[in-house]
Length: 125
Image (cartoon, helix red, strand yellow):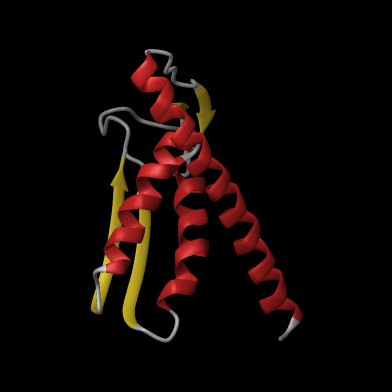
């Protein structure tokens, strides 16, 4: 295995570990919801980051299969607002981990039930 492949595997393992921790946190959240103690975390995050991480994690699942994975995030906040640059980064305020869990669940289920073809996840903000 080359250094580049090893580095990519370590990155995916790290992200997968983080994702697993969040699944455990979600289980705790479920019990909090049922007891009335659920709260949402409001912190800045970039949707682009979630999609890049999902591409890295789930990209390995498509290797050796006849499935193409494409996860995209396109940012268009109010088309009538003019920015100084088209490459303006948009930062959202919300619960990144809960959004990430939703994206991961959708992509994971789509890959699980797709034998041949493509899985496409587009997010337009």
